Length: 340
Image (cartoon, rainbow, N blue to C red):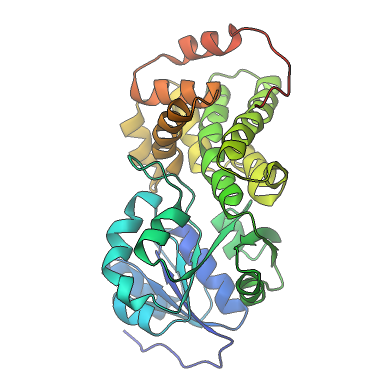
């Protein structure tokens, strides 16, 4: 396998996670001029060095030669100033806890979209426990990996309580096709990115049932109301949910054919079993795990989230999609913006 080429660099970035989104982000950072390592678990990732292609997750799309793929996660973290988390939310503790001593002084940029099961916390809280002294950022927005790696125009948000750090990462990732905006509402950006996946499953179910465009629009809009309820309870700025990481990402994930969560819901609407659909997807649909976490959290906090509740019941309690639809449409009548 050829060695990685030495390149003039803007900064040192380690992307942890070689799935489609991690690979696309690594490519975006590399296209900006950063020195980028991409870590993955299997030998397959080393094909990136030889072929400049991730044939498992993004076959047919050429990657920057500035990306160096590696199986050595410790060395990757040691050599970087910016660590990008691009692994599923439920794996973050397992992967990053052993690295806690190596993370000191580095910027941690999370791109995973989910709520941890059992603890019901977002990723910022996970990293607060693993690396409490680090500066944390979240990168989110309407961004299919395939379109980013095709270098099609995309906009995202980089949020952090440390505004200087957000501006630094903004400059490091923005290029001719990816434009990053900054913000400070970390919890709002995280919840928007996580909860939209649950609503996307519901949108996919509606598509699988052929319920029409009216139903799709209603699910998206009422989904926003649910997300705002949860966000307000957790201290988020409601305006965040009208931005890229809120409404922007919600529309994309609920309507775009590349959305794994929407495709999973569509399969359920067509009568397929969850296990079968997950095997066919070839990647993690974070909304499945988030549906359970969000439902349990909504019960704990006494927040009304009827779409989330029905998605949970369909996925985990064997409720039929027809029964879920009947339950949603038969609820008591109310004002539109009764969001608590």
